[in-house]
Image (cartoon, rainbow over all chains, first blue to last red; front, top):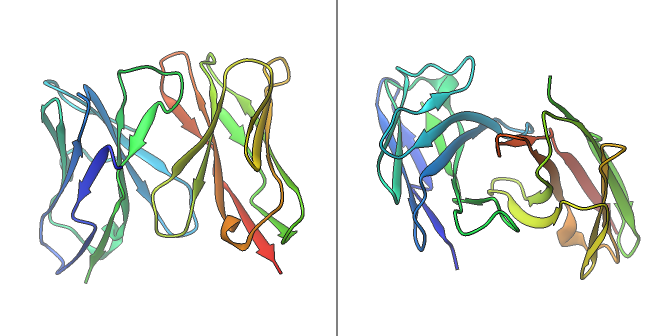
Length: 118
Length: 109
């Protein structure tokens, strides 16, 4: 079964709306979670690394004031897209680093959130 | 800089075998991973290599040569459901995953 839950799976909203996406690790504590964005026919682009209890680390070119990340507990990280515009429409995917060992899957992925801004 | 190269697109026939190559240059190496991603879905884990050699898992096998900075994913007995993008990722010295752009595999009947 899924070990990382991402919600919602699909969002359609008007331009200017803020949208919050949740990422939960279900059976392990994730001190580190990752947020990716993927545009059609392109690969995953890491947006930021979310660390429990501290500020997120953003990749170059990602606006931290627009994409707010909160990792207040060991099982939950949230990404808020503030004042979303049509160009923010994309597929957002979270993943959580599994501390139980790097032997196999280093990260477990959520199912993704498809965000469409009208 | 860090770089992972894989072909953009490949086409193969149902029932055949296909090999998807990946070359990498990264700051350190803590393993190479292959993921499968169907359109509109999140990636799913396929394989992990940290030592040189071949890892076999059913119809899928993955090979690694650390000295050459090279890996391949081998898919046998191709099925239509194997049509997807295949992502190569390397874990660097900071245990961060560096992703390739993905190879779109098209299976024809």
